[in-house]
Length: 101
Image 1 (tube, rainbow, N blue to C red):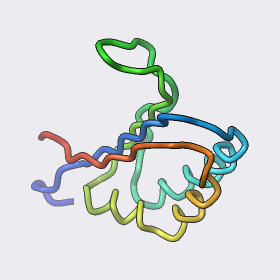
Image 2 (cartoon, rainbow, N blue to C red; image 1 turned 180 degrees about the vertical axis):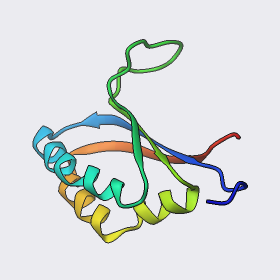
Image 3 (tube, helix red, strand yellow; image 1 turned 60 degrees about the horizontal axis):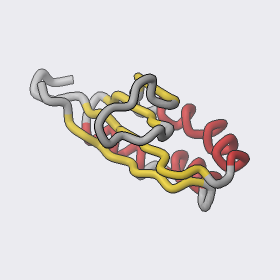
Image 4 (cartoon, one colour; image 1 turned 45 degrees about the horizontal axis):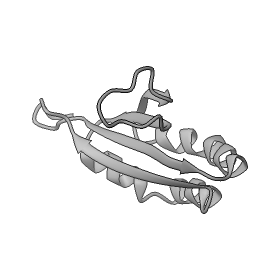
């Protein structure tokens, strides 16, 4: 990896989980798809501490080698299979942010 390529972080917030069964099926597939794109889970679960206007929502933080790798992951056929399993089971926000330095 070139020195000027910054890492990227996917931040996924589960605003609402309406079907735990669909979430479980998603979670059986998704982590395997992440690994193929150099992803590393940094945090998965509920917040330990909530401050300001935060809500107690399941939050996942994943590190990728680059924004391009994160986007390739999200657009991949393997991740689409996982998303199809989750369909209708949760309302989420999925953000990809480039590292500061």
